[in-house]
Structure formats: C-alpha cells, structure tokens
Image (tube, rainbow, N blue to C red; front, side):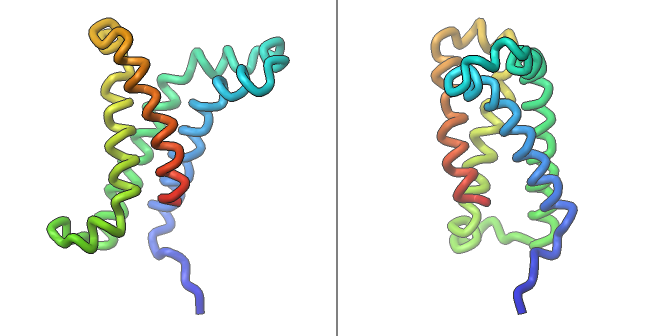
Length: 132
C-alpha cells in the first residue's frame, strides 16, 4: 500500500512556501513572456509586494524544514541523510542568502553583485523541482 508522508502540516507549509516563491517569480515571467499583461497592472501590483511575499515564503519554508527535521529525527552527522536531503538543504541555503540580502542596505553595499547574487533564484528553481 502506498503511504503519504505522515507530516501533513509540514507538507502544507512547504506547498505554501512554493506558492509564495512562484508568486515572486511571476512578474518577471509575465513581463518577458506576456508583455501585454503590463496593461492589467497585475505585474506592478506583485512587484510592489514581492519583498513581503518572498520573506513570507522563506518563513514558511523555514517552518517546513523545522517540522520535517523534528518529525524525522534527522542524524545530521550521517552522510546518507545528508545525501538524501541535499536538494532541500541547498535550496534552503540559497533562499536564506536571498532573504538576508533582500533589503535596501544590501542593494547599496553589493551594487552589481546584488543582482548577480539574486540570479541564484533560477538555480534554486531547478533544485526545488528536484526537491519536490
């Protein structure tokens, strides 16, 4: 018999975090793929709220990870555990970097490097698909 993961709250939080992440990427995709959506105002509305949506998605991902670690009693010193969950940990580390640098001070200090750093979101997107 096929059994689902026995941590429904963690799964719900993970999917909500995924939804939030998708919403942060949508304005750029709309602007490139569907330029006519500019007249609707939806991409501008999402761009204004991108930071708060992204930080909320990060918080949900943090809660998801915490509940999964708590539920499964991970042994962080076991190489097999690390190898199994490397995609989730990698994505979380990228999102942590992006969240920490999502402020005006970081934009001013990092200058061009800030934009380069935030291109990691596309790497995270690929790893996130593997994680799911």
